[in-house]
Image 1 (tube, rainbow, N blue to C red):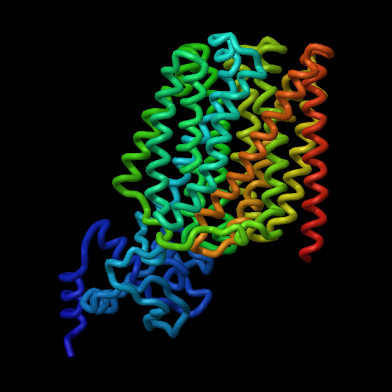
Image 2: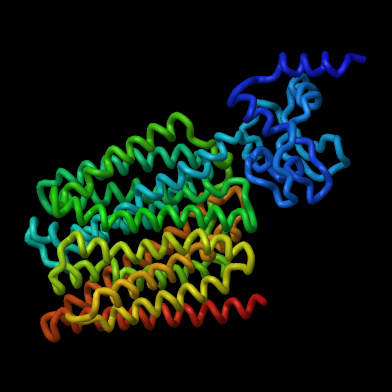
Length: 495
């Protein structure tokens, strides 16, 4: 029998070094009885974390002999469970070169978390366009009811492609479709920024919508691959936080760009961002879920567990678009604020979404989905009510509070809502599930744009913009309040 020193020397000979060693060690983890300490961690990266574990164990040395044995046997332990001290748990053993979700390296786990979120962030920067709408209307001499097609063309395109693209990605591979989305988005940004006529701008917006839909439709599946329960809720919260951050950053950046460079800059600024992400995705993208699953069928969607949350999302997003469509005209045109100041105020709604989303993910993992959804819808309704009562002399502080409350409510609602939909689909249809959540959102956006623009167009000549604005927000408030009541009833029925 070889001595301990010779065994250690052998282990050092066959062990990789540096970063490779770190990620290799992360797959060979002996465990201890619960609570377990660091080596009783449920995942390899959790075991290697520098943060103290729950039982206070701060540092543990990696046993070299089991590692050397595993290296020589050519297998990788991908997950462990509690066993006797000093023994190895091999709940599942796969070849070292396997690419399954459970065999992902530490680096791949970080990429899996950040790449889809970054893609959704860049697409969500489209909130820049809302602040630029008055300038676009002036350039092409178009009234607000015609300018709405800049929004409708975009969201209509990604409403369709988010679901169809997500479903197709279940067979073709989520990362491949995600990359195509980034490429088309880049082309759409360039086309929109160089548009010589209103029709060309609309075509560029439609192309942006197709690309954005493919990114949105695949991001949830890429980010939540291998997660369920509370872990899925936290990842959904992270994704929606990135989306909210993009929506929040957009208006502020747009105000500066429009004031300094003109509205075309809101498109040009995103071209290098999308191309940089595409290069990252081509070089280091996560594998995502395995391709080859069957396409989603009508029976998979036409279920109460899917349509119920989808209907609530439709209403919540249709109503919030009273803010996206009408508030820029109220702040910049009716109140006479600069694009920069208007952008600062306008960003408070998506900022509220970004703040609420991570907390909503943790809350959903603890108490379930229905209570946060009801609370979020109620808070959104309160914010919309406050905005509908705003007039020419309403203090900006009250406007800021109402805008933030509406976004906070929507962010609190969307995370548990998406979590419910993802949980309603099997693992092989997570692309379709993620796409459906964005389909419901964007169909609501299209309905909101069409409805509120029509209200303003029909009533403005008779009663003026301010009254038409108030009537549109009153309708939005009533719709969200009704959705909150329906969610409350649905939550009680499931207890």
